[in-house]
Length: 262
Image (cartoon, rainbow, N blue to C red; front, side, top):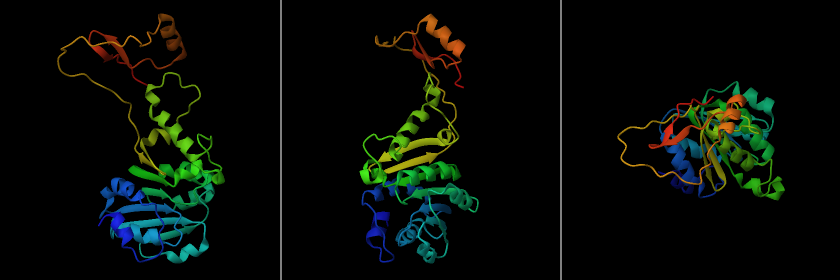
């Protein structure tokens, strides 16, 4: 059964989900079904989602969960461990992480405030296994005024995630003034944006490279609007230690100049 089928046939504890989330789950989580998988869910409410994940992933899943409501502790079942505390408390999160194995999936369905989402992401992301996923749900709160959000408002989770897109292009940015890179940004392999959901895939990125193979057959067209770098600009870049362009234009079109990014 699909996760949507499992949801609509569920008769256990209460679950509340937007319907279009199921297609996102199916796309990203299907590869973990019937395998040994460690998952952390932030925010469990009545505990129905814990039951749903166990049905979806199968008997080899171990689910860890965080909730601020002490009553949620009673929802522990076999292969389920629940920690009580705030997802915006970095010390608490680090203490929880010290007790957990590497995680295949972290799903943030907690309080959905900006501070909660940001602190959790910054504290927990590197705990995800290489190739694993960090998923933040209900990111529409980044646009809701009652959550101190708004369209393109600085400090929201969505604006933070947008900024991480630029960091995926680290090796292609010539002037890195005003942007910083760290272990988190260098371990984000991809970011998928959906309505109200952001999915981060964790994997340490290698320096990109490119090759040409085969025989030349044409003289490539060179766009006239391309900026030609002056000799003075080239010298300035060399003395400032900036990365040079990865490509040059000759009769073969765009080819690798052989420069290696820092």
